[in-house]
Every structure is written in C-alpha cells, then in structure tokens.
Length: 288
Image 1 (cartoon, one colour):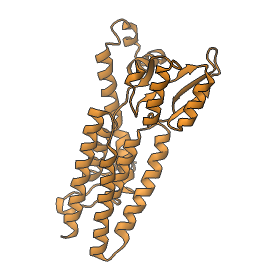
Image 2 (cartoon, helix red, strand yellow):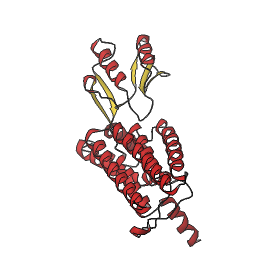
Image 3 (tube, helix red, strand yellow):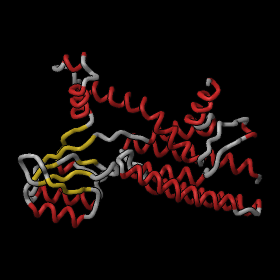
Image 4 (spheres, helix red, strand yellow):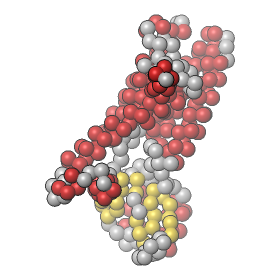
C-alpha cells in the first residue's frame, strides 16, 4: 500500500463520516460521539502507518498536533455559542485524519493552499458557506409557521430592527412541554424567585447557568450557557423540578440550526477547491 492509496482512503473516509454526521444531525438533532471518536482513532492510526512506512514521525506528529489545536480552538468557539459540541468533535476528527494541506496529484486535484492547517480551512469555509444554509433554514421556518399571515407590515419592513427581532423570537425559538425536553436543547431565559432552584442547577454543574435579574419581576433566571445545550443530568433535573412544581410545565428553547451541512460543504470545498479566504485574498491582490 503506497502513500497515494492511504491519502485517498483518508479523504474518502473523512467525507463519508462527515456525511453520516450530517444525516444524524439533520434527522436526529445531534452528532453521535462514537462516530467522531472512530474518526479520531482512524486518523491517528492511518497517520501512524504513514510515519512507519516513511520512517518519518512528521505524519503522526502533525495528526496529533492538529487534533489538539483544532479541538482547543473550536471548543473556545463553542463556548461563544457558534456551534454545538458535536460540531467540535467532528472538526477534531477531520483535523486528525487530514492534518495538513492536500495536493492530490493522482486525482488531478490541486486546491489553493492556506498558511494555516487544513482543518482551519474547513472551519473558515464552513463559516462562510453557512450563511446561505442559515437563510434557507430561517426561510423554511418562516414559511412553515406562516409568520407573516397576520403581520403583513413586518414583511414589507423585514430588515428593520423590530422585524428582525420578531423573526428571531418567533422563528428561532419555540415553547415545549418540559417533559419533552431533550439533552442538547438550548434553553432560553426562564425566570423564577425560588433560591432552591439556584442550588439545584449549580449542583448539576452542566450547561445551565443562573443569573440575577436586573429588571423588575423575578429575582433570577437561568438559561443555557452555550450552543452545546443541556446535559442529560440537566434534562432529568428540569423534568423533576417541573413535576415537583418548582418550575412550570412549559419552557422556551431555541430551534437548533444544524451546522454539519456547512461543515461537509466546507470540507468538500477545501479538498477539491481550496481555502475560500485564501482564494479571495489572492484574487484581491491580483486585482490590485
């Protein structure tokens, strides 16, 4: 087995696993952890084989460094609510399998290289191509909920702050029964006065955080800290608190936007075309 064959296997497996992650994310609302862990193990194993064949440690070393750096960066972005925890693991899996840029001469593919690792090209590409996906997703939700049926004025002033806030609140949030809440759901602000709820949520030590309410009304409110959503432990806690009467039987959550389709698109562009940002920069320089 030569280098080209191993490179081809890495590319094909990475794309297939990413597509599988997208199917799970769109249909089930989450990316299976095991799928990402298998990708990471596969990446370390194949790059170790490359190092053994070439008697050069650079392949496995690059794989490990790319894995750690990509996880660290995407985890910090997860904390800023840019995407979910499954997306972080998927990015990490891609980074482990394909740590450096691709010049796949046997496929006659010579993508535009970037000055940063290949996984960062996937991240950058994914963010840039996510906007069309987001617009399509929001448009679908608006049509499905028929938001403009009784608010025709909003339609004609769609880019005004009032209209955008209306769309955000109605299209990207929904109220559900607490008994139907699931792990990974992103909980919106829930207001309350009972300090015992503060203690219970702090003990859960998950993704929910309690804040003091500075406005009139209830003393406190809790909400999801990041796009990772609530943990299984917090799911059970909310259901128990609802049954015991500490909180009501309904709660507001964000409608999750699946980011994995953008990741797959970003990966395919990075493999066969290159880094969008570098291509844009290169074209600007040539024009100037």
